[in-house]
Length: 391
Image (tube, rainbow, N blue to C red):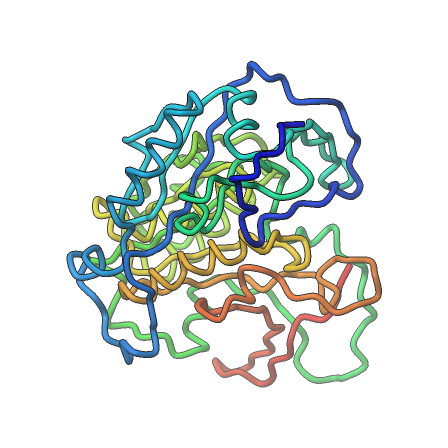
């Protein structure tokens, strides 16, 4: 364990406990190179209420709510003293993110932690995931603690799951006793028509950002889908975050979520461009993907779609705060974030008999989206009830 330093201060909300349902492998190789994202405080606290809905220009946002260059310089000196390199290309004042790279041994010394490797099974039928993490709190020198909000990358356990389900995996439901209309499947344009979605616009001139923490898409598959609806396939670009890539494998993987996200949005707004941000399934990857998308001046998405999340109780507090702050930045810049609320009822898949909400859908700065069962007849909605068939 790194030697105690009386001049160091524990970073608030950075505590990690031993990961549950995981097998301890041993200490992380001290020679292994890893990267961390240091989230730095804003130059000025952001109060969305005081903006009263006013959307800021990027120049105004950067001058008021980005990180202070002096804070970055303080952390650069800290990094160099500990033998860590600053990845200037990956760092950003607007995102308030300074990326540091170095050996595990140097990271442990810099942040006062001891990293260990673990293995956990994400879900039945899937390969176990290897990750590293620590127990206890991150600590920093007195000069650094007040300017740092979170250190991401010292804990790489999978943080979220894709919120989609296969029909074959659902429990068989009893036949409805009612003689009224029965459920039938709709394609996205049919649902849009039932909701009287505007037909005079098609998303032209807008970019829709999609956050994905795994999987990928094949352009040929997208072309086939849109051709089946008689629509032209939209323009889709993949953006790599923290080494994440468009890596399609099989439909039974996270590819199903990626395809679903692009195909549903693309069939409703076929004139829009799509930027799909691929990142690792960690709190670092999730938060970096959102902040990258929000501040992406090359693609400039006006809305972000997120179909990933996990029980709020499984998220570290510092990560919740960091992700929510990224969502506040989006609100200030006029970027709407929509997030799936999950498919596991009030328990959110946690087997403790308690109620749980899914994060980041539970953030007050995003639009949480749930699903319903829609019954229609004669081109109009007859009834609509929330999905309540947890499997």
